[in-house]
Image (cartoon, rainbow, N blue to C red; front, side, top):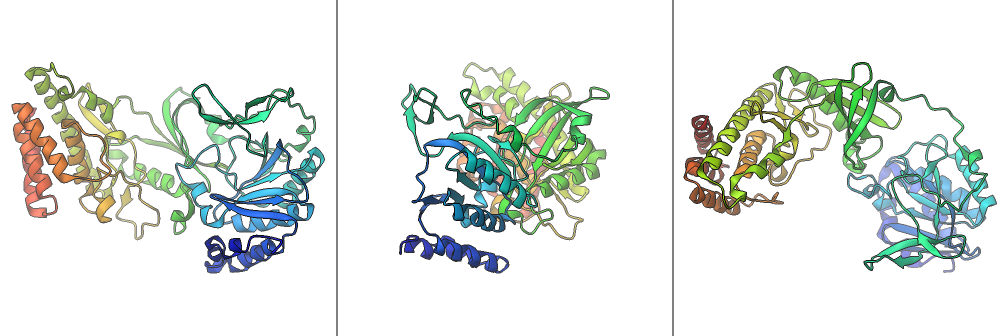
Length: 495
């Protein structure tokens, strides 16, 4: 068969194309097009399916075009792109249907995110023609942004880089992707979170490809100025900002449109924004408890949603854990007593707040030392991450729950009940014993560590004993309740 490898047609990627009812017609159409390709060498290369023209030799490097998409429109966009590039015998590659959801996951490479289809024009004239064609034909579609590229349309972006794999090595022997500079020497093909173009490339036709539509200025940026970034992932960043009118410090949590993949198929909207909207709703409901940041504002913009909440000063519980005297060989009894006294105040305050939250029919689900901020002046605590919280007054939970292994019973049982109490106990244990975050709740291992702590410091003996009993009976509700009363009594005695 001159057109494509027969094994490719039999590949499960294509059987999956036909397996979902809503995609049957489009999937069959794409399959027929793949079968009819002439002068193409087609092969599956892990994540991508490569369609390389045998009629036009592909260059080493040049201006390439990326076409983005979302989980719901990718197949339709792929069909449109095939209709444009195949008659011109342009080489291209596309994400296999089965892997399109991986592109939209939280921890997928931010450098590669959004590059569903990559097109390799033969020269600059063809590049300009294809860009303008995509701008016209694909203007009605929306997709996730490509962070390494210059955007020239809703889902069309461009960058200069390598077409073929040119490898060099750095001083430590690690391989790096390269392109040739104007002298013909290899230099790094920088694939970074910024729009990159080599200094020696100065193409005057790029300006004419700029997006024609003028974007309305973000309402968020009109009111707030970003001063720092706490974290990034594909679902969105978390930023520190100031409100322009009064210099109030705030935290801005981003939820990028279209990210999340098939796990959000039953939610509305069908992406990670549903989690951020849920968090905002719950923050509003329990703000009277003073256990979480106050919600200040919420923005629904072109790129995604943005929750603005109160900035909470203090120290993360995971950071305070490093003050545990058990980490230091020369610690005195006074060090242990002071640490436990402060810890008791923090966890009694936290327990009281969790109880009030639960009585409001809210279950937190994901309570860990990473999302608790403590005030060491007052030994009080606040919970700063409610992405996986549930409002039990809602008739239906239509979004996925993300919880941390080693802290949440929900991770194993998938049942919502005493999750927050269990997480509270595991956080307390985490502040006493030396342990990394467990990928599994190995009860026997945790109990061994608690027994070690009990021997090291007599002051901790009674608390460790009751925590051990809790873990031994944590599936027996009656005995577990008695153990909780003992643990709380131990903490009160320390204060």
